[in-house]
Length: 158
Ligand code: DLZ
Image 1 (tube, rainbow, N blue to C red):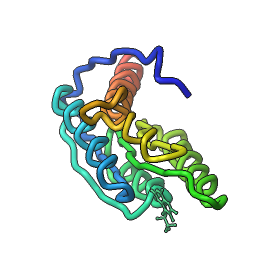
Image 2 (cartoon, protein in one colour; image 1 turned 135 degrees about the vertical axis):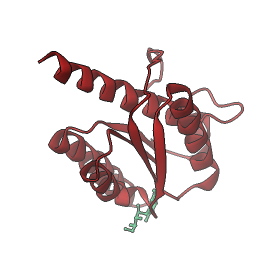
Image 3 (cartoon, rainbow, N blue to C red; image 1 turned 120 degrees about the horizontal axis):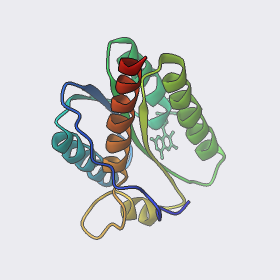
C-alpha cells in the first residue's frame, strides 16, 4: 500500500483522554512509531498514557480494556515483519480484525499504527525516523484524535 495521498490532519484534541497501546517487537522501529505518536499527541493538546504489551497479537485486548476504561481514543502501534512461516498472516489478521472489532463495538476510535512489512527496511522507512519517508505513528495518533473529535461533535449536534 502506498502512503501517497495521506491527508495532513491537524486537530484540537484538548480535553481528550487517549491511550497508546504499543507492542514490543522490533525495538528501533517501535521507538520511531512511539516518538511520532507522542509528538502528534503533544501537538494536539490531548492527554495520553502509554501501555506496552508483548506483541501485536496482544494489542486488541489492551485496546478493548482502554476503551472500556473510558478512553476517548486509542492509538495502536506495532511492527510485524514477515518470516518464513504463515505466522505473519495470523498475527496481522488477529491484530487488524481485533482492533477493528474494538473500535466498531465500543464506538471508541482506534488509530491503526501497525506496520505489516516484508522486511525491516520497509518498516524503518515508515517509522518516522531520520531518513524515513513516512511517519505512521504520528499518522495513527492524528487519525485517532481527529475521529474522536468528529464523533464528539456529531453527538453534540444530535
Ligand atoms: C511470535 C511473533 C512473531 C514471530 N513475530 C512478531 C512480530 O514481527 N511482531 C509482533 O508484534 N509480534 C510478533 N510475534 C509475537 C506475537 O504478536 C505474540 O506476542 C505471541 O504470539 C504471543 O501471544
